[in-house]
Length: 428
Image 1 (cartoon, rainbow, N blue to C red):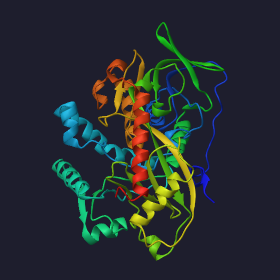
Image 2 (tube, rainbow, N blue to C red; image 1 turned 180 degrees about the vertical axis):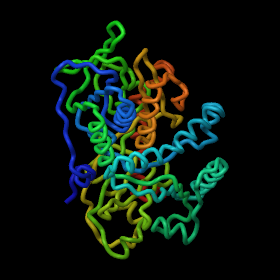
Image 3 (cartoon, rainbow, N blue to C red; image 1 turned 45 degrees about the vertical axis):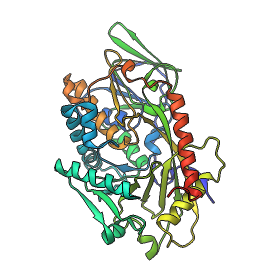
Image 4 (cartoon, helix red, strand yellow; image 1 turned 120 degrees about the vertical axis):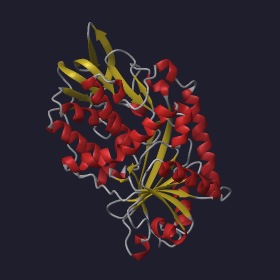
């Protein structure tokens, strides 16, 4: 029976919980948000002996960090040369290099601290679903290989072998990348941080952030944290009216569905090398297997104004399009998440006031970008060197997206129509 429940809550190792903040306290750095960014920053600061408190409004992994697809990808959605056009060659190349190294940062943390993140590091596949997509794959290959990146183009029978489908004839394999159980990873980061001396409080939503003299007071319903520096690491899951960072992106929702565990020769044909994958559709589809050999499908889109069967029909269509040879099986879990999005696919780094740092709009690349930015924020706090940050700082005003709520709504409408066209076989 199909349940609306996040698969990762079922398959992640035992989850530790942390007490809510109930007494006033003081720290060097207070981090708001216990996801990839916040916990990476906490670990890299604690390794250098800095006192850190993390405040999480829900539970660790309760936001986007525990609901993602689990693809450990490099770069941004934008191609490297396009980044150079948007940012200038120097800044564009700096960002491309930093995000190119981000998967290694994730896998190194997992290995160094023995995190049971169910990680694979066999590369991910960008699958071209039509001629336009194949041209895009070729362009990306040329731009990445020109920069010395270990990527290759798979075609014909080799592409069919790797993807498990004859519906795809060309794919870009990025050897730097891989997959994880995202909730297992973020909970592992929390355990590491706690062992390094970081104090973590769950169910401690921030209500206000106020400056008095040279310190910041981070206020929750029950107590306050006095801090020298504050990192806001809440991104698309920012709650309340105490900050304007939500105006720097618009929300895009993401749906995922997971089958029951599959077995047998036919099931083993799907992504046999445990690669993660996504296609080049306007409303992309993502594909992967988990440790129990479930097939996971995902796509952009939320639940509002849709019948319950809407995405199940979409999943059945996609499964039949890519893997028609599979015997009958049951879908087991489905869930939704969301991420911050910008039109240029570039995240924003902000220093809204002295002593406050934040990054927003990871555009669906939260695992690597978040882990990297956490380390970068820690390095910046430790050294004061702005070169630690791979993007120039923007102001809130510069970064605001006009009518962000309407953009989110129109994006959702367009995605829904696209999926409807797929199910009706109008769009292929």
